[in-house]
Image 1 (cartoon, rainbow, N blue to C red):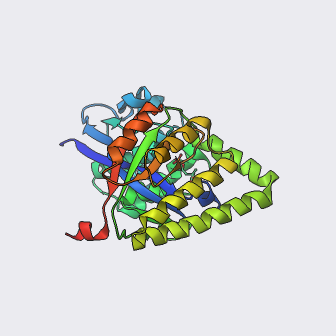
Image 2 (image 1 turned 60 degrees about the vertical axis):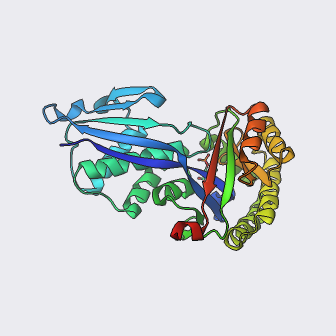
Image 3 (image 1 turned 45 degrees about the horizontal axis):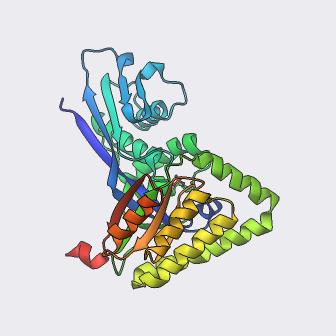
Length: 320
Ligand code: PMV
């Protein structure tokens, strides 16, 4: 049997992070500059408990049977087998490689789950459709993050910009004009689960204040959607700035994120904000395509450990 190989992209959240956990809308965009690849090689002569999992990026090289019971990779395999009503995985080697930094808001855990679930379903001869991939990846995401909204697994599964409200069908976004984003990594690892739990505790203590933040973010997400659909990139930049200010008030930013945001704006970005769980991870800056490299260089000079320039095409470009 030939090896099976599946890839899944990374993602950024353009606006609405955290509020999305509370039923407010958010917008997410796949990032194809980075990806996770899962390659499965059949080992027909080995016994089933000899399946090897190798994920050098997270320092993992282990027999499947030696992984702890609730390890996300072990659970992913169980979910796939359950969905197919199978009781064991025919022996194989599973190799997972990713260029997505972990704990940085770029969707590394969701991307890993999706590449793995897709590859496993193909290996087992019954490729899942996107809805099943997304459903299973969401179950795995709960192991990583406790109470995820589902935005990461949805945008990575479908690989398209989308407007997302928890527990509702997602809406695909059709951009009037292309947008260019600089994504810049603070190098500070941050646990989304921890920040989400902190926000929950603050929401319980200061309910009205946090409901008000979420309402403001909801308005921003709805207006960002309008801007993307009408091609108003200037107002889009202002909305991203406002979203960042609210995230600062909510205690989700940190000094390095703020330094990188400020640097992006001083160097000509139309708007900038932290993206994802916060308290570390990445910022995103909306830039004109001509300024992208200058802004990226300035942000690296200000301390970003890595920058990615990503372009989201307009609807017209996609149909050409
Ligand atoms: O995975 P991250 O760090 O991009 O965070 C996802 C966005 C949150 O709104 C913070 C959490 C969620 O589940 O939506």
